[in-house]
Image (cartoon, rainbow, N blue to C red; front, side, top):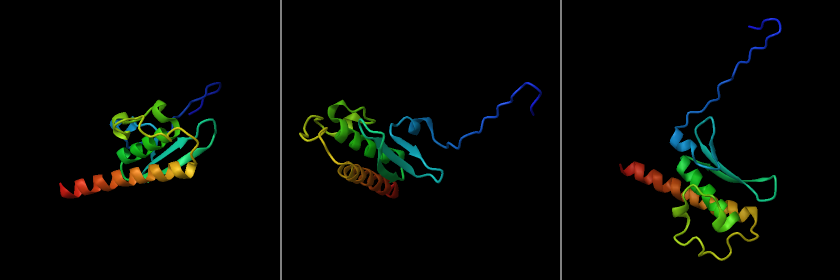
Length: 125
């Protein structure tokens, strides 16, 4: 539907079945088939660390928080600052020079544990 001298822009609607509550988490996104994935950018680099895919947005956000805390220490901007550690300064090695594999492993452990806990809670109800 183009007239001479005019350009008609048609917006392509993005597939986004996410509630506003779930959309607010940092470092996560949803795949078209419904899985939640988490990743984080490495400081001072263009690369990202893949943190895994999860059944819930909450589990993916927890995995992101874990990685952010290991990468940036107490300066990290977290989704759930109260849930990372009771004392955010308790871990001495946080924020130091850690490998991407170590951070990925820790984040996946937390995300998998949260997913498992949520699965058992929903099966009990």
